[in-house]
Each structure stands twice: as C-alpha cells, then as structure tokens.
Amino acid sequence: METEVNLDFIQKTVAEYFQVSLDSLKAKTRKKEIVTARQVAMYFAKEFTSHSLKSIGYHFGGRDHSTVIHSVQTVSDLIDTDKKFKASIQELQKKFKSKAG
Image 1 (cartoon, rainbow, N blue to C red):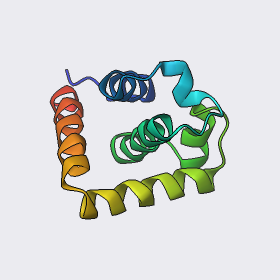
Image 2 (tube, rainbow, N blue to C red; image 1 turned 180 degrees about the vertical axis):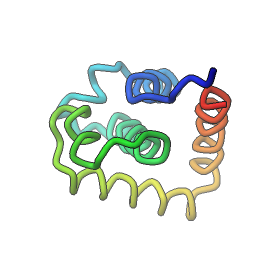
Image 3 (spheres, rainbow, N blue to C red; image 1 turned 90 degrees about the horizontal axis):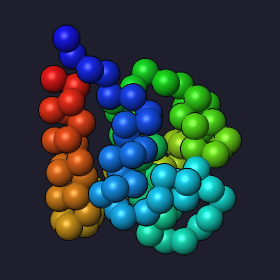
C-alpha cells in the first residue's frame, strides 16, 4: 500500500530539513530562512498533493492562493539559478518520492 505524501508530512520534512520549527512555517514571520523553507514546502505541496492553491495557502497560516503561486514560481526560479538550492530540492524530492512509492 502506498502512503500518500500529505501536507503534514511535507511541512514536517521541510521544517526538519531547513531546521526551522513547524509553527514558524505557518506563522506570519518574514525571516529569510523561514520564508525559503515555507516556499519550498508550498512548492512540494503543489507537486505532491492534490490540494488546491487556496487549500495549500490555508494550511500555511491562512495565506492567499496568490502567495502559493508566488512561492512555487520563486522556488522554480531558484532551482534554475542556484545549484546548491537545486541540490537541496532534489534531496527533499527523493524523500517524498520514496514515501509516495
């Protein structure tokens, strides 16, 4: 039986990876390291779950769907321009893919 990669798992995994608290992903804070972790978590939420943008935003502290679109775009751009960042994303992606089976 394959286990679904859900929002909780994504948030927990990304928070651990970036060494930020789960609460901070959902908080209103704009500290760079937390914003990056949050954007990455939203990116994976879009990629690995069937949640709508509105629903994803809601699970990240009631954010707007446009915030989710912006996050996904930002992460995509960083993957294209930052090799170190891309490696992090690929590492996280492996964790989700192995869980998704």
